Length: 158
Image (cartoon, rainbow, N blue to C red; front, side):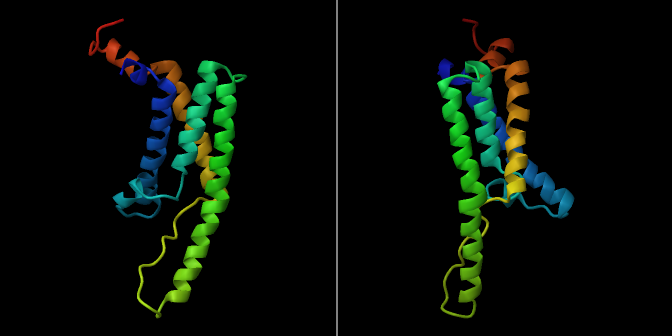
C-alpha cells in the first residue's frame, strides 16, 4: 500500500485529469452561464482530461526516471496515440454519430447515438499543456500522497 501511495507520477497525473475535468464545470458556469454537473463525467469538451492525464503522468515519469529513460519513451508514445485518437478518431466518430442521428429523426424510434466523443485539436492542446502544469509542480513541491501523509503525521515515518 505504501508503494502505491508513494507513486507521485500516478497521483499527480490523476490530479491533472481531475483538474481538467473540474475545469469543464467552471467553463460551463463562466462561458455558458449554466450549472451542468454532468460535464464532470462526460467525455469530450474543453479541455481534454485524457490528454491532461497522459501528459501529466508522462512528464512526471520523465522528471522522476529521466527524460532519456525507456519508461518515459513508452509514456510519451502512449500520449501520442491517445492524443491522436481523441482529436481524430473519436472526434470523427462523434461527427458520424451526429449525422446518423440527423438521418434517423422521424424514422424508427431508437435511442440517439452519443455525439460528444472526442476533442478538437485545441481541446487536446489545452489538456496536454494542463497535464505537466499540474503534475510537475505538484511532484516537485509536494511529493506523493505518502510524503504528505507522513508530513502531516498520518503515517509513521519509515
